[in-house]
Length: 189
Image (cartoon, rainbow, N blue to C red):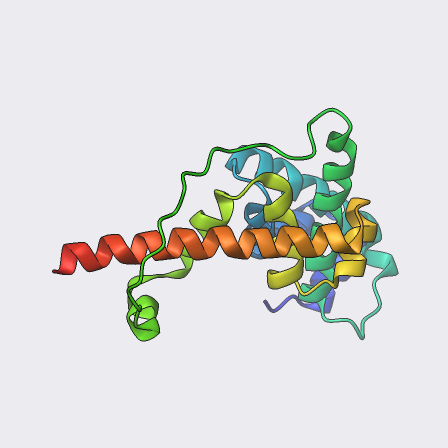
């Protein structure tokens, strides 16, 4: 992402055309962050718009030594977490989902074959099938690189609970991947 300082200064001066140009330039990056945390595209777009308003309001406070893309990603993640905290009081902490028992297969999978069969979109769809809180914690830790302590502070949970959600998500993803590989292997035979 290449955003000129002139565009940023015009946005600080509240030039609407420049703000819209910045919105279009940042949309893909911000939407990718939102879609990692929200299953519904409309909700992700609403989050993106809230985050973008925060970006516009704080442009004059941005330190130029921080890369712009990293700065807007951080604001977007914080917006997602803030909305989660607000909605946490009305929604349940964990949405229960009936996972069928995964059968243990004694077959060994060729991990190179797995790489060939999976693409990022399939894995992303599997992550979205996780319970919401496990999905958020997994994304924050594995994708965005937050520590369990930081996640605990953000979501008002203990470090141990954060670790549990990551382990749980990994276990479920491993089961989903194994099931998919088993299906692929059956089709190939």
